[in-house]
Length: 243
Image (cartoon, rainbow, N blue to C red; front, side, top):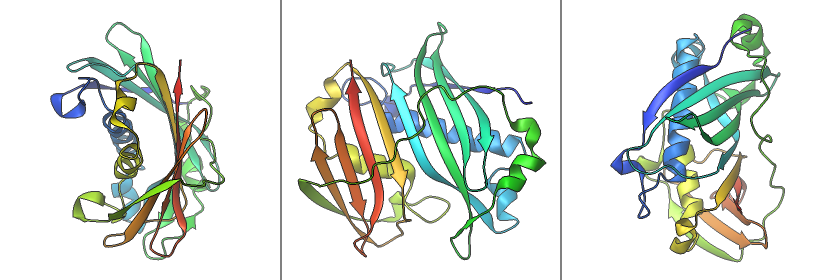
C-alpha cells in the first residue's frame, strides 16, 4: 500500500477575490495541479498515457471548504488514491494550513479516454500495474453527488475561446466552475460560511462552441447546467453554503 503525498502552496494575490480570500477556482486549481503532479511522479501521468494515445479526464468532483484562506496563507495539499474501478478511479485531497488545521477537502473521480475516439477505456490495468500507489484510507468527504436534473430560471451564453481550453483541447474544469459562479450575485462571495461544490461532467465542450449556462435557485442550494451547441447537458453542478 502507498502513502499520502503532500505538496506545498501559498495563496498568492492572483488567487484572491475582493474579500482577499482564495477563490474556489484557485483552490480547485491547486487540487487539480496536485493530481497531475502526483500521477506524473508515480508513472501514470498524462505524459505516460499520451504515449498510448490515452489521457485522464475528470468525471466528477466535490470540494468542501470550511473557510477560504486569506492572501499569503501557506497551506499543504495531501492527496491519495483509494479506489480503482473499470471506469473510474477515486483520488482524494485534504488542504491544511500551517497550524495543522484542515480547512478544505475534495474527492475526485477520473476516467481514461482514447484521444482518437474520445471514448472511455478500461482503466483497471492501472490499478493492477500501480497497486503500490493505492492508499488504505477513506475519502475525507462524501463522493461527488449526481445532479440528475436542473430547471434553470435564467441563462447566459458563452462562446468557448482559446483561454477556456486545456491540454485535452476541451474546456478546462475551472472555467466551467467560473461560468457557474459568475451566475451568482457578487455578495454571495462575501459570506463567511463553509461551502460545498459538486460538479459532474457529461459531455466535452470544445473550442468555438456556443454554450448556454443556466441557473436554478433552491432553498438549500443553487444548481447549474451548461448545455452544448447540440442542446445536450454537458455539465451539471451545485453549490451549497454550510453554516
